[in-house]
Every structure is written in structure tokens, then in C-alpha cells.
Length: 249
Image (cartoon, rainbow, N blue to C red; front, side, top):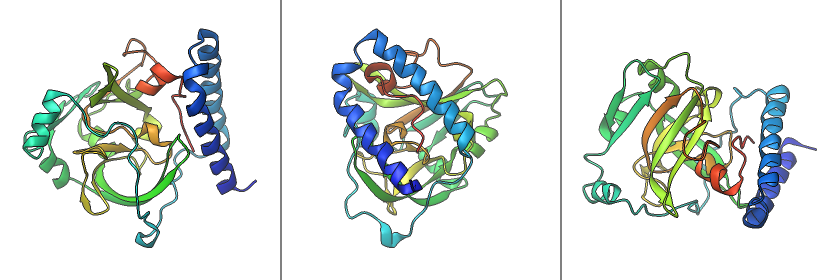
């Protein structure tokens, strides 16, 4: 089986999981099995692949004519509505948790720092894919600038939107956090990130499926454990729909 065939099979399988999750994952027994499977998937991936390897990158000739919107299209939070109304001029990205120097950065400050542009493929758990160009601040250097602690094991992304009254969040481990292609994207296809696509900043963690690409990021928190954080599974979909925490492709 070729690498491309294997990846497409993984995506197709993920799409089937998504369509069935509302029926199946309500069972505590099934949730326990899924959690065990997630641990096996992560352990197996670490054994057979180099998680520091780069995801494939493309050229502008490969850009998709349409890049569908995944997840929420417009957060309803009053604070986000106010930020949107003034063009995110007062928006700040908070960086905290297990860091020596907590940060509060404006969009202009993020844009003024080191930048990375990459053209990558977004693979959605629903079964569709699209290629887009992203520009943003590499997460690794930002965390190092904040003085991230050696005790930090995960980076949590707290977002402006919610689903059914539950705060939306996601998390990744330090391997992905320090990966050179993991960026806080503010530009898509050479245009400021649109609201449906996650303005003003969204996560791009290119070695994982689309639901890990958190939109509307407001705060980044370095933590030692995910236990006790919301549902304790490391993300909204992981907490409420049984999605695997590690969605590597």
C-alpha cells in the first residue's frame, strides 16, 4: 500500500467514524475502547514514523479553487463580536500556563515577528480535502520566547467559539507544538484570514486531521496534564464525540 493510498484510507475511515459517532460513542464502554485505541495509535505512530518529518508541501498551482469551512462559521460570544466589529484592533493573544514570561500579543505584534508560509493539504474527518496557503507565526519559537517550562507536556488552545454551550478548545503535545510547520496562521491564500476560516488566528498543525486545527484562538496555555481541563480528553470533539485525541496522518 502506498503512502497516499494509506492516507486516503485513513481519511475515509475517519469520515465513517464521524457519521456514526453520535450513535456509537455514547456508550461508556465504547468510549473506553476508543481511548485505548487512541493510545495504541499514538504509540504505533511514534514507533513507525518520524513525527518530526515535514508534511508534504505544494505550489500555488495546486491551490484548491474552493477551500470549504470546517467547524463553526461565526462565534456568538459578545467579546468576539466586538473584536470583529473593530477589525481585531484590540484583540490580544494570551500565552500563559507553564511559562516564565506570560505574553499578551496584538495581531500586529504577531505579524511583526518571525513568519512562515506553507502550502499544505487540509484533510477533514468528514472526508474532504483542500490545499491552501497559510502564513503565520511559528509556534515553537513563540513558546521558547515565553520561556516554556520543561514540565509542560501539552499546549492547549482556548477559542472564542463554543458548541451547545461548551467552550471550544484543542490541545497538542510538545512534539507537534515544536514542529516547524505548526503555526498560528493569520493569512490564508495571501489574504487576511476570514471569519469563517478562523480570524484573526487559527492553529495549523499539518501532521494531523482538520479537527485539530483550532480556529478563533484567544489563549494558549502550557500545561503538564489534560486531566481536569473541561472533559479531560484534550479537545471539544474528543470530550463530546469520542474523536481520538491524536489524529496523525
